[in-house]
Length: 310
Image (spheres, rainbow, N blue to C red):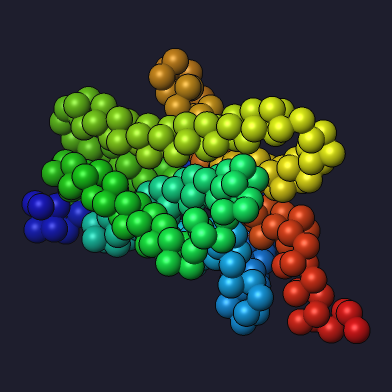
């Protein structure tokens, strides 16, 4: 950990190729995004916490997803906004690495929670009579706890590998927050092996939950097809479509990034950063809005709390 003794510091640059006269527009977009995500995800969490009838597995999973998104935005957006507003983009070695750990931790957590939600939908649709005995409050609590622990455990190896690298005393991070990919470009010496190990870890975190999600929905489709109840398809599609939209927002941009890196597709740094921001922040805005609009119980509770219903 010689980086501590060398007093390594990092400076967030953000969108480096955008003219300075557009910085105010960029910062306003980021600030608006931050306010929307805090209000929207905070509202979902509060509604589920204060409404006893929403203390059910599906809503508990939604609350955990909203909390993960809320924490992610709070550790990334204020710093890059401060960079644009007050030129306060400098971070110490420890600050950058803590942010990097939390960024990847909450990103992994989202993936794991989406996986658990898919399994929950599988049990609810394929084993409806046994749902309450299988997905008990205890199972729900354990599932959420395991997701949080696995997310942290999966990121620790990445943190250890990155901490062993050497960095310039003053380095510019061409990103909106510290990530392994951004810091690898700054590291001195040979980093090929480290890059390969980090890629394997990232693929495991991304593709393992995705495989389980796809498998659960394949089983749901097969089960509904074999059941012969065509009238149930509409209800199943309505139940699952919300989850599928969220999954698409989360996974499709990430898969594109992995494919582009594997195919060595060279994109401008700002294009890469834009893709990063899209798959990092767009789902955080969309998730609470989608769930509030498509989940009838949450929508009714929100209207009642706001005094919009008698």
